[in-house]
Image (cartoon, rainbow, N blue to C red; front, side, top):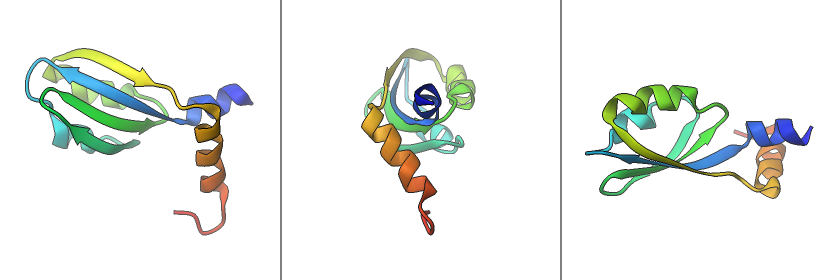
Length: 88
């Protein structure tokens, strides 16, 4: 269903921290990709549930979480690419 596709999609997320962001720890979380950091913010993409990401990030003082939901085309293309034979 459309709701299932959206739930499985990759969401871009920004985590804003009170102090220095834990870039290495966040990059190790399953489903987290494309980790980039600025002064107090980690910009990343997360596939599936964000529960593990939040468990890792919370002890470091998260001030704000901003999510950017993927549009339907991004969700569909991500799903389609994963279904192709030989896709990595």
